[in-house]
Length: 278
Length: 305
Image (cartoon, each protein chain N blue to C red):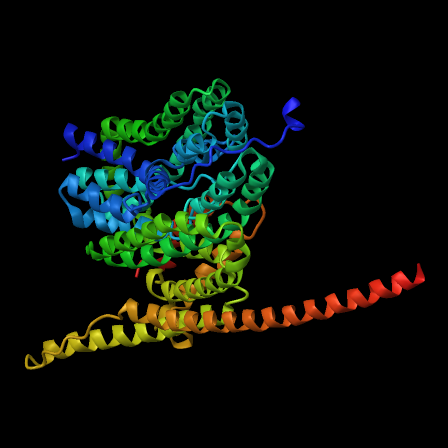
């Protein structure tokens, strides 16, 4: 290609404005992941939310823009709570260096999507839904809808974070990643600690099962649940969770399969008169 | 009994189609099973039953998040159908959770996979539009992604609601009479299913590292809940013995337990930041040392040359 020896095409010199950030954020909040598919996952979504801005940055350089669009349309998948951080850093680079930054941006996207997926999934896809879900569900099973609204309120706060992070990342640029590493690690550590603690608490309150088996030896009736309570209250729920945890660690075990095994085993134990609802 | 009005079917189908788009984008929590229970319950005219079913299924999938784009069990659609049939056909909510909610939720994994697969068609067209630099075409084909996504929830929910009624009615009659053992078993399973959610969640959390806090969380709650339940039982008993006894004992407030956990988390965060600072300072001094030693080495090499 002749372009290879050419001096990198300069950009149109366009600087992103607050209006641009608003447009990207609206597209991100309402339309990101519409194009999710098995082949390239979030690729087209990543491209779509920044397309108007890319067109402004590259202006009349149609060949350069085409190259950039092709690069942006490559495989991409990360946490949809952090993706605009990558977009922000990316735009700061492209705005300054234009097509000369293509390789850097491609590397940046590939390098950052993994770590952000890990942090984002563990905090926003597992931990917060688990804590808020437990609170909301706990109220819901008693017929109380307040927990649902509480959860929604928390999610709106999270949306606010998703909104402000784009401009923040754009301003900080590439230095952001190294600078925030320590804080992010500490935050993840504290969050997972809270998660583990809460799961412990939930096991003790929300697993409703008890041993209904009563042994008759001569005239004496032995109520097993009473004996178990003397050893440790809530021992049965703890043992059940422990057993399922072990089962999930086995090969070829999926969560869906585990749910069905639990249902079948419980029906059997209930029919035999061993387990019953609390 | 046993019938669901056509407008209820349409509203429930519309909600099912909306919820998957919410899950993909905004995440307002409207796509969660508790909300599905609340909304489906409100549409069916019994919000409380909906909340009970939604709450139970929420607990079942507590730890099941979408990790790296993997399909997850669709407890939302499960809740919609379980709620609709529980209220429409008079099925016990706990039984509906295990008998309808969970099987439907896991069947819907297939349609989720289908949506993620068929969407490649439209996104391939995006590739072609890039070649032509047709910006309108890129945007249009990108947005067509909404079609496979909404249909993947809308079609099965609509078909099940429209044609599943008679089948569920027969099943309910059978469960209540001939198969009471199965009915009891399903109820027990409904109460025990949250255990699966917790176990899955523990698989994704660093349990070994934080094992002490798992024990603390469990034991503090187990002891307090026994205490609080005991007090409540005692209170109720006393009221019946002496009508002058009017003190009401509340159940264990979960928020208090969560705040104890938060306190531990804050301490851990502070320790980590402190450690990071110390490590950072140590690394900085070390770097200086190596830099100077590099220089020294460089000089020696230079001399040898």
